[in-house]
Image (cartoon, rainbow, N blue to C red; front, top):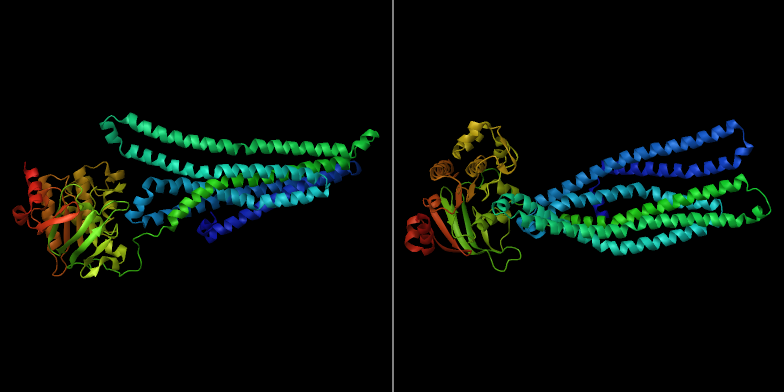
Amino acid sequence: MFKLLKIFTPRLIVLALLTLIFVAAAALLDLELPRRMAATIGATEYESVAQIIERGGWMFGLAFGAIVANVFVAFFASRMAVGFSRNLRKRVFEKVEGFSLKEFDEVGTASLITRTTNDVQQVQQFFVLMFTTMASAPITFVFGIIYASEFGGDYMLVIGGALGIMLLIVAAVMFVVFPMYNRIQKRLDKLTLVAREGLTGVRVTRAFNRQAREQQRFHESNVNLTRTTLRVNRIASITNPVAMLVMFGMQLGIIFLTAHTTQGQVDAGETISRAELARVFAVFQYSMQIMFAFMMFTMLFIQWPRSQASANRINEILKIQPEINDNGGKPLGRGELCGGTLVFENVTFTYPRASKPALRDISFSAHAGQTTAIIGPTGSGKTTLANILMRFYNIDSGSISVSGTNIREFNVKDYRSQIGYTSQKAMLFKGDIVSNILVGKADASESEILHALDVASAEFALEKGLDAPVAQGGKNFSGGQKQRLSIARAVVGSPSIYLFDDTFSALDYTTDAQVRANLKTETTKREAGKEAITIIVAQRVSTIKEADNIIVLEEGQIVSQGTNEQLLQSCSVYREIVNSQEN
């Protein structure tokens, strides 16, 4: 938990200190008020009206000062809490952004969402409670006991007994609920996962009339979370009524002790003095303040287990060392790898927790100014090959090099900036057309954007206007339009390597041919030595049959490679793919 204190910036530290100062001031003012009231009660019959008014003015001033101090406490504590949670969410999100796909696979997207939102909220609530009680509760507790003892040491036995009982109760509750908070967060992860799948897959669910099944899955996860939360809350809620019971018992004890000490005066027919009444009143007030301070500690300790569970989950993310990171590798300028050769040499890769490699002993070369195509049956490893070329994963063995340099030696960000990449699922971001194209090159000029759209045959973008809105995920565009915009995004940066992962599947044959012709011109008609490497992962033979080299994958291995004519003669797997599509 306290490891997260390093998230505090100098500004937040100042806010935390101001919170502590005003909390301490409010506590001291609250403690002084009963002493003044007791002194006033005890001296009223001997003082003039002016003196009584003066004492009342002091008490009013103390009460008003406590109110003002508490207002400042609320202000500074809220600013501190919001700033802390903002910084913590930012730190977690930035850490997650640096993960390779291996870390995403291991932790899970749903769990990452929960840790960035709910877990941060739990830690925020704890720190607010901690800073508002860290000064108040100890001051109230310690000085309350000191002041109460001034009015009679016998009363401390009653107060000490009540505190001992409360300590045992709090310890028992914490022992029971601490492990249960971990289960709550895990079941919240499960609920987030089910809800996310249900919402993102709503079209499939409705198409197959499986709403009832999804509702049942959500209901089961929701009920499991509810039951665990109720169980924890029921156990934790015991502390409040028990604390009230102990506090009332403590007050009865004080009354009984007062009656016992004054019994002789009552039996003798004497009137209990104002000083005695003031003493009992002060002890009553201080006993309640002591107990409330202890209850504030109790609330802190009850909140601690869940906050600690959340803090542990956040620290797990912050402690992860990404398998792939910017380790100060060789920097690259834009287009620096143009004119080079991409070489895969005996590359083997296995997904985390997989029983066998997804790719085995992959070796091939892709030359600048040429188009290298990758084709194969579903599950043969085509997209996996694209993922390791992008360094989304690290390979198990072998090497991948460009222009004679292993890609692991390059700065990761600089290396990826050399690649114009389009994923198998065309992904657009909420905004407009221009903002999506600028993802490929943030400082692209209008002429570069228009040229990229022309290469991608995205005339529709000009018809709609470059400021035309793009919905989340590009849902207001067709599949073919999204693919062409993603191609334009890859082209605008004039990269050294073009990597198209099944990017032409939603295009009609005419548009497919036109876009490929444009890309051929774009990647080859450059200055000598500035040609780009083009790699196309495809399902359709028509998309890649004109490629300079076609690599055929099956079960993670290269079964053959060559031109279309060569493979038709020598590769049975390729012939089967061609025949299946022609028929």
